[in-house]
Image (cartoon, rainbow, N blue to C red; front, side, top):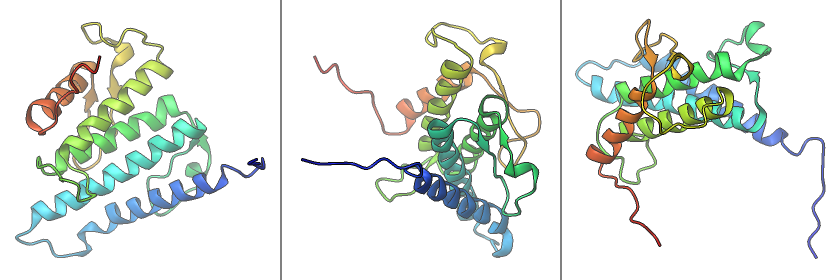
Length: 193
């Protein structure tokens, strides 16, 4: 027989580890230009894109586990950052902005099992995060229906790789997935029946 013990702190370790990952990603984003990248901007952009990707990934996991949580976007944590904020209104736009920045900064080359994210990974996670946001928070039940609406458009946060005034629509998400399938070297699974 296997017994498990329940504890009020059983999810505390996940919380700590995910915020630790966010802290490391924020450090990478903030200190990327402490290195002289002369003649190597492609590597700089790849590493910066990976930092944005990881911050978005860890924050996505946090919201899917805990819902509304503090949104930490800097290594300097302000009093406002220590408060829980709305995942629907504040956190998901940041997550999607991080993935869009990653997509725009990283190379369009498959990482091929190296453990690094690439443009196609970011595009896939744009779709994953957008579908969760649209389906769970916005109550959109027919994501496959054609057309964009106010209900499925996200105003993104301005940061490197994601210009001021950027928005993400369902059409953008569909185009990102088409890019993954058509150019990423990935394909949809055959009918398994």
